[in-house]
Length: 219
Image (cartoon, rainbow, N blue to C red; front, top):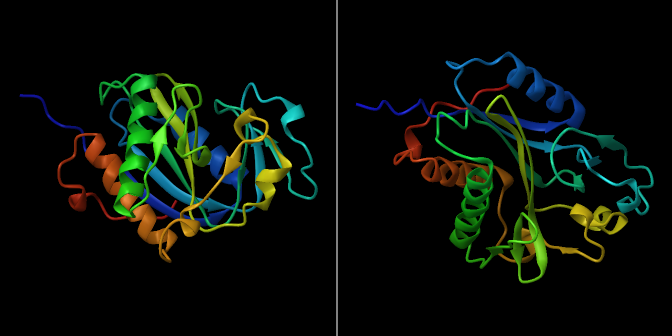
């Protein structure tokens, strides 16, 4: 009989410096082994622009006083700031029988399911990973896989200042418009959104009772 892997441990980190969390995510991935429990980290970041491995500096139009960090995820440039929910998925993909494309689809569909709960119609696009409301982007993806294990993850605009997105070509697309949940639904809390997204990710991973997941723990 196949034994289902333990549900990922969920950590809620609050508002954190990007580089500190990134380095801890790298260390976790480098040090894990086949028996290490998967983890999902929910966090908000202080304002920062991040460039993916193939990120082109010309997509940083006018960063101003917001710092820029070259990171090791996939994708181009994006912005993180307070009021944006970031979820980092440290998953053993072999354990879940997932390829990278399947993981991307799982993340996108989890976000689409979440937004549907709030009465927001959204969709993924084949030509540009992420989740969109009509032609406006509400969620971005950037992943890295090392030794069959994923890290980095997604960012979902919940209730934030969107102005810094005008200083870049979001995800490398000139004139890409962005939006957020606050402008599309009733007042919500980022904690409630994190709880709902956590449930949808676990359901997509095959856990039928996400409410039975381990307690949330600090980093």
